[in-house]
Picture 1 (tube, rainbow, N blue to C red):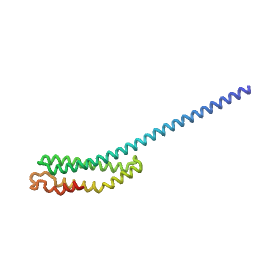
Picture 2: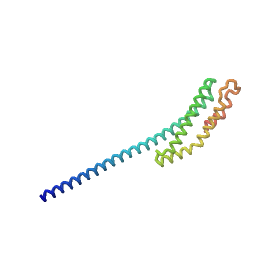
Picture 3: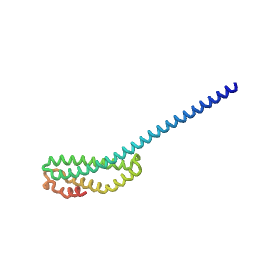
Picture 4: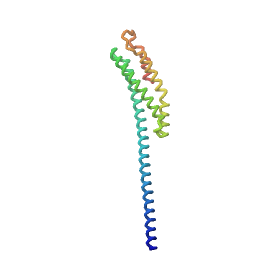
Length: 169
């Protein structure tokens, strides 16, 4: 009877040990799974943030090119109707360009970016900000004098210096 009790104790200890190891193993597996899912989630957010910044920068560059083309087309418009249509297109492009610059500035301060990427974006924004402001001011000045008033004896000739400033900026 004494041997049976000892055997039962050993079996019970073995089951407790097995149960403890099983729970510990399952807990470790759960921790690894949650950690891996969190890591993948964080990496995807960083990747998507990086992609968004690159997309915004490319869009801003294309918008600036579009604005210059529109200024030239408005300046060289053959008639009042073409000039008015071009001015409306230019106003829309300018508005989109402003929104893009605001979005880019917001992305540069985004907590979703890695610190090195965020610092690079902020440096890039700071580097182009003077040119952005100068071109924005030039285009706004151009729009102020580009009114396609058919009674204007100069017929938009006054726009020439503003066109040159926009193209140079």
